[in-house]
Image (cartoon, rainbow, N blue to C red; front, side, top):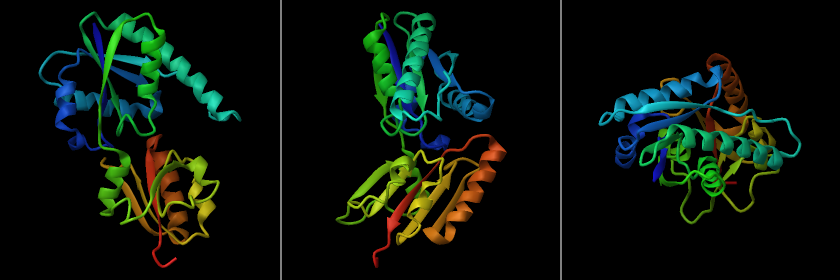
Length: 254
């Protein structure tokens, strides 16, 4: 039977690969990579370099899958994401069916960890359930962006006896979570920390964490918010893409 591996590859530093991930890379006959266009070419090249460096025990093929367009302006957010996932599942299912032979092993390389704000598992589960192609799949965990970010800032995400939460920029715009003192924010292209500038918070922001172009800013949120906004805009313009995240911590004296 065909096998598909979902391999977490860390937040951007090639040395963040686990020994389990390296073993998994060397099981693969085919690496499936999603082509998101010229703006994200650097991400594709990173995956290719990772395979060249670590997948050294057997020959392999690389199959590029054109990523379906996503409507990011739709008012019905959940429905738009659902339609995008359905289109992705159709493209991935066709690639597995046409490019992976029986008893071969294919792999998808996932930035960070497949369990944290990533759709690879759910899309492959949809393919596994709906497609006529028979295959099994395994998940190999990776170092998350939250772990890498906290390490680079030399902080712990949570505090003793406190609640920590991971959320999105969309949810942060509704207000800082009342039940948490420490919040990691993902998927925030709208600079949603501006919605909580009146809160007594420190921010620990990072972009391209673990990569040569890494940027880090930390400090009182109200003081450094515009510096982060400017750095983010300049970096996105320079590279054509950006992956960033930040941790907000309520100050103990608040």
